[in-house]
Image (cartoon, rainbow, N blue to C red; front, top):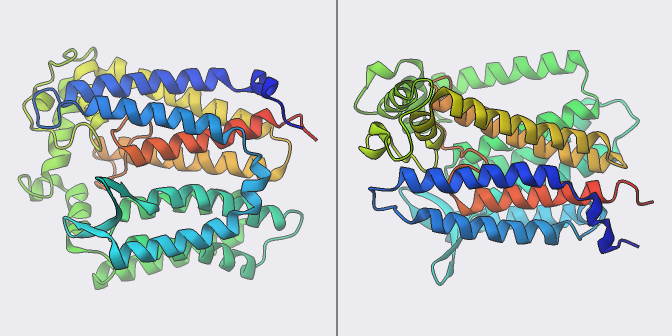
Length: 366
């Protein structure tokens, strides 16, 4: 029987790192929106964070084995929700990504599907544990992730679609994918990607423009290349120590696009420099190390698979967002975990951390 006394096994160190990063998020959002119409968003971020904390503690009380058991039903509901978005979702800037629940509340199913996929993939590969992965097994795993990916891609939302991939990759890796199988899969993906790019039928014009801007921002400096150029200017102008809070010319001058969400790391670099950037990245490293440690001490395979699924998503989002800010990757609209503004992203992260705590607290429970 699980007792509240087991909160002594709660990972308070991990929570401390998360809260420190959350504090930096609130302060940077306040600074980045100081002279814009978005001023005051830091107050909403605080509400998101507090709500996330409550959900995290509640999630830690539910036995994760029950979550694994209901993963197929949650998966089915997720597919229905994604279809509903396409049929009755609210259309904003040409994309249908939200369901209007009334009262100014909008629900974005695609963000929560990440959590469902982590549970579903963990359950799938756990049931295959001890046997050699066959091509039908791999095909089923691709289908499991591919169906929601296709539904989110047609919204269109390429950024969120890409965040599903690391869950599949981590599952295949932990599930025992062989080197030969990996090589064949990579070859097929490269061929399909090349064909899709040349035909232009799989990518929207704005998505192709973003990739072209990534390859050469100077081809359209005032159009598709504008975001990357301004981001690089902001990061470079921060120097070693930064210009100081509220002193970033690119951020405060409204040159840096959406500095409180996608490009918050660029705004942070401008204000706090190389030292501040390294500090934030070190904080992320500490969080990831604690997560991996919890995966190593999990009492069973489902627990380890779930935590590593969370690690995969967080690592992917950090790599893509920071790479985008530094001009090393195309602009995709993927937020920086716990630092970027946004309710859906914050709540997903805290719910995921709640499951991690759940697994840690039950590592000695038979």
